[in-house]
Image (spheres, rainbow, N blue to C red):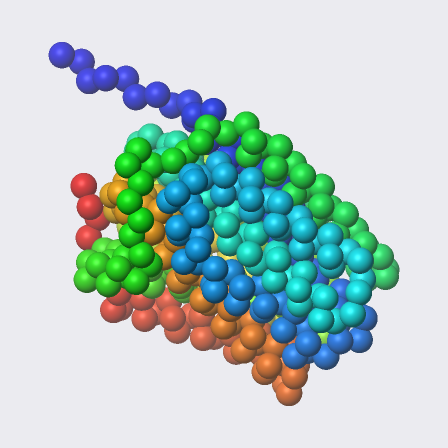
Length: 388
């Protein structure tokens, strides 16, 4: 008897979820330039850091509610609600009101993105067949990169020319498109929803070496971005170059890698962990230590290749490890591990830059990243066993 032919076409619901993700990432990507816009308005580094970091603190503080909301109402509802709240935050920032309203606007953005992102990745995981996880999450991973490639250089030029309104207008358009895609999705609810608390999920997951390894790897993956990406343009400005050299080359390399090599995740699995993370850390060290345009292009390319593989790899491993009855809690917990680093690392960077400058601090962050990857390679990944 011949084995059944496995479909190679990505499901329609998955493609709609990717469309919603791409649209929402228009907002998130151009907001990497929000710290630069604040700096050019005369805000101090600690104020810049506070405006950035309140997003993450609100996001983290609402994780338990997100877990309950998605269990009760499903992923489609989550994406719709998240898009609306995210757009409300952008609209408030667009108004150009005093600093405290900036904090409120960023808080709304954090709450909206916290709902949307977990709902979106959950919907993707439930839509994809097991043999297309790597390829599917590779395609999904293009969502944060395409806006970065197409809009970051243009948006940076607009901000540097004292026209920051571009990032707000582009963000509002992205939120509207995300809402439209999400409205066309199937409900995406669990068949028998049973809420598992994040605390219970953490206790159970930490006892499983495979899950513990994924959670810690996700944290280092987040640190690689959170410790560097929000302030690349600020450091570049100190060095007399533009951050687009790194941001654009990183996005292009990651895009090509995810589009063409996402299927490698289905073939090689955990064996890609060390080479992909090594590319990330090497790229960061090259770019930040040398601090010139050629180094930004070379380092950004290496960094992007690694990021291009790590994203589909971690989500494919997570999906395979998650039982359907606890998948909402596990995906929310994984997102929490990532967002903890997004809360801590930018705050530490901004506080340190108040004394040392962004360039010096980003060099230190790149060296620390290399040390963390070495730790994972020696102590964490050897305990990781691929589940069948």
